[in-house]
Image 1 (cartoon, rainbow, N blue to C red):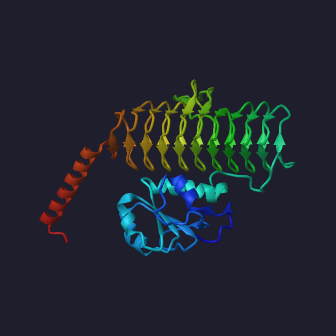
Image 2: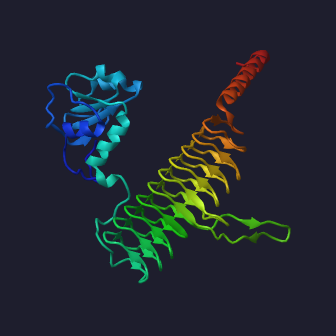
Image 3: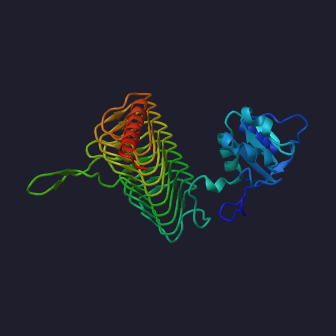
Length: 351
């Protein structure tokens, strides 16, 4: 890895500590006190580095790596070269993430842009706002009346926390983000530029003009949710917009009013979810998925990227296409179209 200019190392990590984090056993004869000082890809890792491998595509890179140690799944452990300590674990990537968090703790969430502690004199915190001990408020932050911020939360430069907003403990709100009409649980991460709690898009349309419908609901963000940069989550119209605990939302996602998202869902970049749709727990939406309003996507369902969903999706199913349908049906349709196109080309004599 290149020189850690932006994310300072917290110090070296011993192989024994890495093994404990990864749930791995050190090979016999390994010096558990030997340390790694950084993390790098297989092909560029050196004798002070930790690497990982869990994809057969990188088998040759694994065989040639010069890393001090490598987190590797059992199926690839035999390909680890003699000079590298094989730390065998069933989930190398997850283990690598745990070690990275130990090596570069400041990279895990937005932090103070100034390395500050306490409330910056360049911020504005309303006198009626309540901040628990250990809250960090960067310059340019605005905290409105009656807002409450929990201990250990960081408000990065230029973010806005609206009147009456509640933000739990150990949270981070990135630079330039805004949080209005919302309650956030503990350990919530809101990346820079995100917009939470603004008006939902509600109008009573008619030939005489479109009458704005007041949006009087809230946004409820439960514990351990992560919200990507420039994502927007509209507040509810007459009931709350809800994001369940542990859900991870990528950049540039639009979540409309009254949407309810369950626990531990994954929503990839440029997804759009229309109003009053419900996602049950553990749903995965690939990039650029569009979901029309008032639908229900069942628990554990997965929707392929660039698909458009226009009807309810059963629990545990895998859908794709436009309009989205079960993947086997979608693949059959694509294969049929491909064969028809090839036949027409051949019959027409085109090259």
